[in-house]
Length: 308
Ligand SMILES: O=C(O)CCC(=O)C(=O)O
Ligand SMILES: [Fe+2]
Image (cartoon, rainbow, N blue to C red; front, side, top):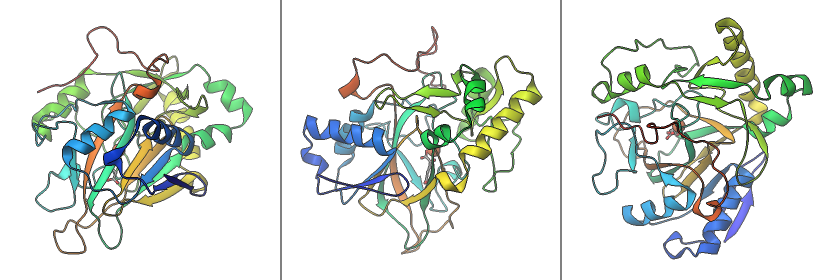
């Protein structure tokens, strides 16, 4: 296995066939993700079963809140596609800064996209490094946010591709047969603004865009102003890197140390334009570090939130 770091962060992994992955190699990949925040494993040829098994090295696959379009044999695998007949929410609807699953009591740990088809141009995912962003904060700001917690909501910070807020009616029937609306109306988990990574031990900003809408103990305006300031700092281009999953690549990111966004793409099923990926998102600790204390613990009755 060869690991080639990118600047300013991220790494490519080559010379490995995940079908024959050993426990030591799996741990090396988990360590590489914690160190580099985003890894792109090149040239793989996996069945759905093999990919599902691989994903479990990075945590427990998330029991996703919507039930539509899930593969009954592999419900953790979600298809993202720019085909005009694909569900609009799973084309390029993630083209705004966010962290996966931060609207959950136990949020996303790693997310991976296995590219089945990639367009000739476009289709990058853009990441920002929240560890570097935290380390670049002035000490006064670090002191201010230490111990503060943000309140999150599904699409609480939903944005358009230009990051302008999109106001959504919490009671509206919407995609996924209203499941999103009900979930949005029901759940408001609280997460720290700064977390210590369970594998790397490094401190990072956490989920400062996408779902936070208030800060515990601050009034609405002050909380929103602080969130806006932290987001503007964190998504500055100096902390960004765009990475494309080419066909055969598995692109994996650490939701505890990055924000990301899709790039808007033409909806097309033509040759050279198709983008199709299989997504798995996990929660909790990678099994190789399963003896460490969990970072997030769901309150009683909220362990897995699946509304159907
Ligand atoms: O399509 C992409 O590049 C990223 C989509 C995304 O945000 C996700 O799968 O969590
Ligand atoms: Fe995402």
